Length: 219
Figure 1 (cartoon, helix red, strand yellow):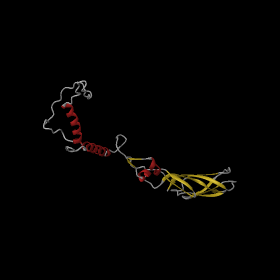
Figure 2 (tube, rainbow, N blue to C red; figure 1 turned 135 degrees about the vertical axis):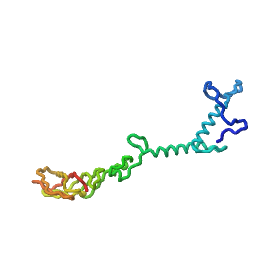
Figure 3 (cartoon, rainbow, N blue to C red; figure 1 turned 120 degrees about the vertical axis):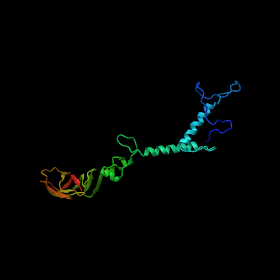
Figure 4 (tube, one colour; figure 1 turned 180 degrees about the vertical axis):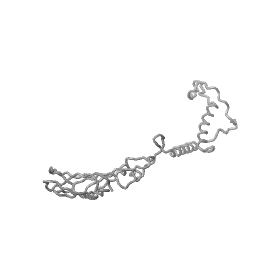
């Protein structure tokens, strides 16, 4: 693309004529003696300069015979705009870009400039299971090695029973509850709690499978 370089050109644009009635090109008709719409210098200059200015704005130099300049300029302008916008970090008051949070940031609820996605939401909860049952730790941003969590499962119980926890508690100060599956028993008593198990007893209860639930701080 290059500006018109026929010897009949002029070095600078003339002042455009007054606008009459803008419209569309009309086809010529020999039968009707109609020469069609006359291509004016004003219109040709407008088309030329709209293309030329877009090319120059993209940092591309004009070059006669190269039909790819406008395409190059559009791509360059898009890249520039994308790069400029990518540098704007979104916040509660600014429209911008967010990176996806790392697993560590999700687990510790850190960095308000990162995005929590459905795919990494699961990483904000620690979860595990084994033969003793299952456990779930809630996310926290408290600078501590302990996390609020739950443990549950089913284990064999009798009148005197010991429940081994699926994972270790931070301390023995936690809530625990056991209920039998097949029978109704009362007068449950908890005798001792440790970070890995708790013991208890109840009156007049045959051997059964008990459901347990534990709530407290996980190590």
